[in-house]
Length: 101
Picture 1 (cartoon, rainbow, N blue to C red):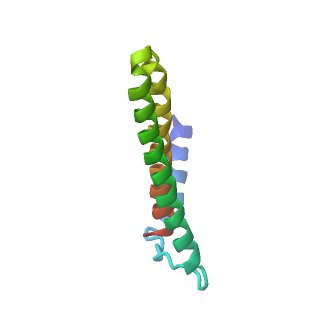
Picture 2 (picture 1 turned 180 degrees about the horizontal axis):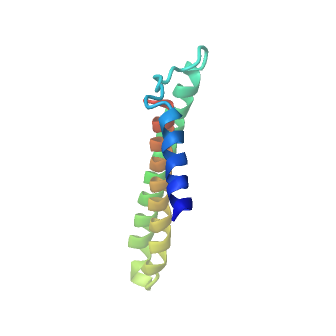
C-alpha cells in the first residue's frame, strides 16, 4: 500500500513541474510555397473529375450491357470509383488539417 502512495506522490510532483499552458502557435506557410497549394488544388479537382467520369462510364456500360445480363459486374467499377472519391476526400481533409487551412 505504501508503494502505491509513493507512486501517486511522485506522479503529482511530476505533474506539478510540467507546464500547464503549452504554446500553440498558428501554422504559417513557408515563403515560396504558394505554388504547392495551387498544384494540390488542381490535382484534387482533376482526380475528382476522373472519378466522376468513371462513374459516368460505368453507368453507361451498365445500361448498354443490361440486356445481355452482364449489368451486375459493373457494380464493382462503381464501388471502385466511389472508393476513389472517399480516398481523395480524405486526403484533401488531411492536407487541409495539417496545413491549418
